[in-house]
Image 1: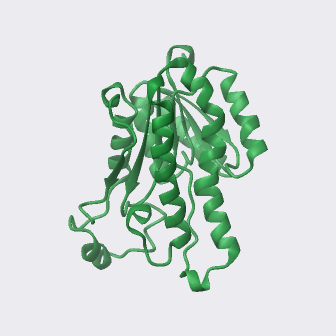
Image 2: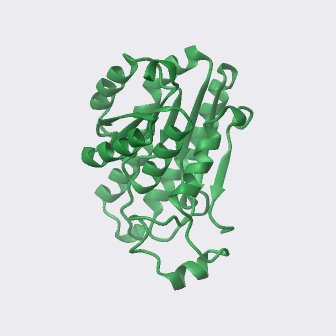
Length: 243
């Protein structure tokens, strides 16, 4: 079945947004490789949901910050053919005001969110370019476009993703590959449920609600489609009119 389908790799595919993206891409006819770091059981559960819907998926586990580990995993993936849709969704945050932030909080967030992008994307590029069709969607954040108190590390990483997106888009444009960034605002899920109460959300978001992982997934799915072939080097916010 996978031989006839374009293959997608979604890093952080076991999280709230990642799972929604995996389900949406699979429903659109892609074979989805669901990535997790340590929570391979969660990735396996996403795969089972996809297969239950008569779509195609598999799971994989590696630490995006460990270059040798990533390289070995990517080589195994490429044995089955190129990855033509890549969603760089893996990310963490460790919030603290910069005056009180320790080096580990800075380095770990940069390592996962920004260095992880490089470690995963770079070895997939040449095989993707040889197919002359590809979609790379990088998950940024409203923190990367606006900044956010207590998130200098996270904002720096997500802003770095935007710069990398724009540069890479130019490098691969002639090969039929688009590269875009998606910048979510406050999205319902485990990363936000203990941070923003309903009153705070109404203060911050003109639409007076959080976004849903499915809404983010729909945007990613469109950017991964043939219909989005002329959209590249863009940062698309999905944030309920936050400015």
